[in-house]
Image (cartoon, rainbow, N blue to C red; front, side):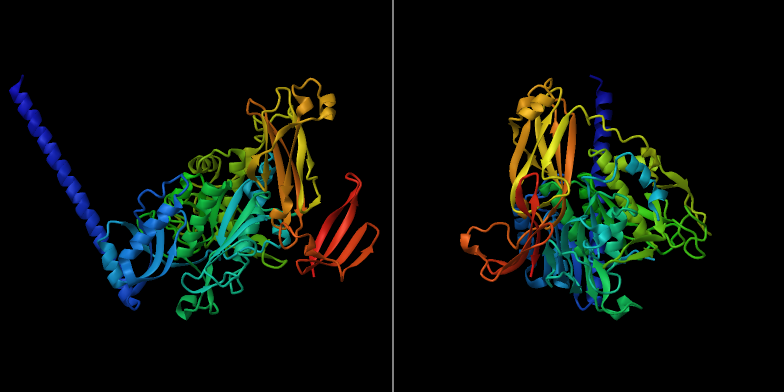
Length: 637
């Protein structure tokens, strides 16, 4: 053995270990120093606010939440409760998150001291207010080319975190699939039930103060659909999430009437938590979250460390292939973005002009809007001035701002996810940037070069899914397209192919439900497709209670798969009508003692029929195909 070399190597190893330990100690000291500085800042803010501050905290949840997986909700709740017990009476106004390992609460300075020394606190940020990012675009984005290629956002959902959505508007009829409200964590709740949270139909109706039309305008840009006017992803569905609150602080509201519309971080993050749960635990095919809101602080570089809870929430959605699309803000910053557009993992969107005027669009169509924020880390540009879309009631408004640009990108994201359901957020961003048009900031003092405008023209001719096989033949016989359905009916049809059929599955409003029993005898199909194996037993069918669906327009889609994975599909759009409950078990539930019967040229009208005391007018029409009367309209009296 070469003793000299051995000793030299030993000395080198000892030196390297000493240096590594010193580096680790220095890093730990740096982390402790940053934590101390953070809590000192929070304590100062609390003292200036009467000894309290509203915060959002990420806790160590002992593995209950694991990115990309369904959350162990019982374990998370236990971790949240254990942590809150340590804070005792030093916290109030507590909000627990369902999927994310977060808590929001108002804490006294004494509670901040406990948190500072508690290793269960992984990160913390102040709960701050945001405002809407406000200050014919489809062709400029290339949407008609995507539509011609067969990509309309069908089967995809976009969550609109905003001031509520008027789903009864003609432009949005049938587009709003899910509604929830998270409001009033600080300020006045605008949820229809007066509480801080509400779920179900009507939960996300627009509030009634200034700015509350914002969410309806944004949703129309994403997925509005009429004969002569369309949103970007015209067949996508909207998840409408109301996160506005009424703020009574005159200083904060400024020139706006009091109360003014405010979005608090805790409510926004609660909505993002809800989206994660919808995708991971309930199977919704959510392409993107749209957040056309922000603050005013300027960030010339990504703000990941400033608001760690936002960064984590955006990343956790990104881990399950949901993009968080955020308006860049309207302060005319030429080298900075506002929060939450400033996160490195968000899809930040600046605004270009769809028309020319003497103010916002002085540089002309396709150039940057005068008010748009940009930075060298901006993700994309899209039309944002002047954009016509729906406003609550039955009207339309033509507005400008990055609030209008962001939903163009969210709609484009739904189109891209329909085209490739397995694409990651990074995959789609790269494809949109690689195929986008170049634009530099040509405004006075502009410094950012070679930004990318979303342009879907590259989808021309790309609409042929290699797995879609027209040699597979199928029919969707019930529910028939355009029919009115209620109560218990059938979901049935047939499917056959040259290689046989492996299984049949069905979707409602783009969401996969289940496989349908397959193999029923169909002599008529055997005669038509005698060469296809198994065609005599090609029927599929199941009973279905249509009253379990919300009243309104729904799309049923059936897919038949061969063993090779190739498929074909058919769909029907139907209108669901219903009574006040889905099932009546008591034969005496119906009271006809005070009812009237009449008829007109096409049907029979039953007036004042009472079900469990609830009065209805019911219209019946004769079906030639089924040779029976069917209910086509139900109206409460």
